[in-house]
Amino acid sequence: MAQASILNRSLELAGTLPALMVAADRVAATVIQGVHGRRRVGQGDAFWQYRPFRDGDSASRVDWRQSARSRHLFVRETEWEAAASVWLWRDASPSMQYASLRGLDTKAVRAELLTLALANLLTDASERIALLGTGMRPITGRIAVRRVAEAMFAETRDAAGTDTAKARPLASLPPLMPLPAHGTIVLVSDWLDPLDKIEAVVRYYASAGVRGHIVQVLDPAEEDLPFDGHVKFEGLEAEGQHTVRRVETVRGAYGARLAAQRDGLQRLARPADWTVHFHRTDRPPQTALLSLYLAMADLRRLNAA
Image (tube, rainbow, N blue to C red):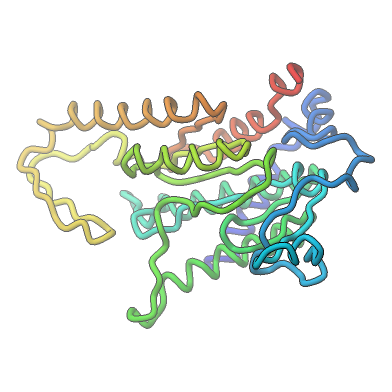
């Protein structure tokens, strides 16, 4: 099955990095101490905050005293649980189902591969992970990776749906969900949406004290526009068709527009102290994963704390 293949590839990809990363004393030490703002071991029982009850939470986690003060249910979170959690999200919208050449991963497959490989690395470092927007409670261990994979594949299956009337296309931007301060999110997409919509996502999470990492995944044709002559372009999300009679004449303007989009991503991320990573599907995924994992180790922030 394609799903099993992606999961197996993610395990192999994650397995190529520990020799480079975990064996390095400073990175290993950073991970052990908590590379995502985790408090010291031994303080995990201290109260952190109340948050709204979400689908997937057990009834036993409800703080009934706090909930009795309003019309809503609240869950009591501790420092360890709140600060040590990483929420993962990958764009599975129709536009991600693009590959310009036979044998290349689609953007969706590469996004899932990177997300699951990162999930493996994080759980190996005892981090708690969850898939954003699913109501999953952040957990660690191999079961966490399996649950993230199952949730991702279920979303994709439901979105595709054999019954087009019941199919639920997935959004190209991450959902805005209440997350605890000092948590971390990793968002993988092609990030070709209008910058003002992306800015709303970054502002929402950054204002809540959530640290973030943005990964842009593009097909090589989306970067290089290698076509010549008369070409008809058709969007994968009902954008319609657009014909360009001499593509080579617009290649320069297209490249400038893409560069402006990338500059915009970095401009949005900079004030929030988020990181941005660029990857294309004809290049080894190890490079992007290594860059992202190093950024999450965040040695500069830890030393400044």
